Length: 534
Picture 1 (cartoon, helix red, strand yellow):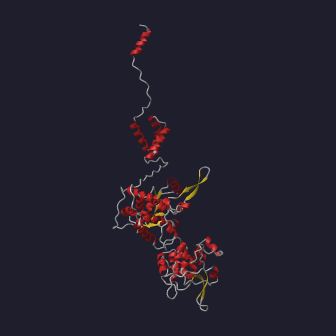
Picture 2 (tube, rainbow, N blue to C red):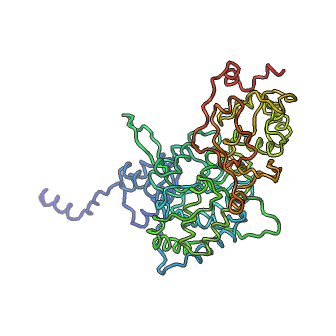
């Protein structure tokens, strides 16, 4: 046998050489999905340590595997440190027309079953929940604020109920100013802010942003963005619900509907929120607002005349919704207004307004038409629950500080002559009429002075705004004549005993300030200077 034949025989008898196989075998689809899910569950550190080897095993580029894992984490609500996208559920309107009164009553029940609210609070909460679904129909966006003196008064539970009823709810317990306006600009949610007392009081930027969102025409902030530092506007126009321990900053309180909450007693029973779902209620809200949108956009309801301008603005959207819902809801809305705004308005929003309130209460019982600065101070510092006894760093309010607090209201002390020409006295102080304009403008609930048969100020003259209206219906008060500054300066101004404060001039401007003396300038620099009173 030749060598050639021997080679051919050996080749034919030899086992076929196995084909070379790649170092990896692609897993079946089920195995691939399972492995990707396992990788998505890993921490960032653990994933980084094995990403390249896993990419090789799965037949992916490492960068492609990174993108797949990122998407799976986002869909599962996981974060790799860069945050997760927000997803808001879509609400399908109820298929049948909805009775408005029945809807408001149903939403009130949602609150009543789970949280104890003040009188009128369930109605306010129900109407505000509807309002979030028709927010853009109105020019004003009030805050809904649940306040309490201490923890465990139901604020968080109230916010949870709201989150299941309002449009596009977004809850947070910690926010930055940039977070607020960028969130609103992108998603237009209903912001639900809990524990606001933890970050709000020392954050002027945040307060300014929340303040700006009250009026649609000014509901934006301007910030510079990008490397080119280009100015851009960001919207702050969105419904907002806030939970807060203690008193809110005054500018926010003025823009809010306040629900003062208290801890429930042992006899007040509520149900847990676990497993609660108000999806059908939310669908009925959507149907109601869809059917009434045009009417709500054009609504201009009659507001209770006892409200001041800002209060009327805050409550107008809710009253409009209540009127559209039906007569029962309209009545309940106005009852809620009376219950939630009829509290003692002497709790002034600023130190100056508080001072005017207290002076008004002192003057109503003061027997003369003149009062000296020292007598006024003596009465103020007896008010133990007010700041005046310890206003000057633990010491009593001083004449300088009194003058400074009253100056912005156009009230200035003067040399006053009291009594007859022969037996009178001359002192530094005020006439009652000096306060008429300021009281009428800043404390309207103290703005009626009723005269007795002898034409003297009655000791119970300062009335609430509602009492003023009732009085005006049955016994009109004499309007006060306008007194110019020259009449006051020479001491010939009217004593004001026969005046009704609500008749004071409404020019919208305070009196011009007199030239600032050296003492006043020093006081501006150091309002607590006690060197003259040591």
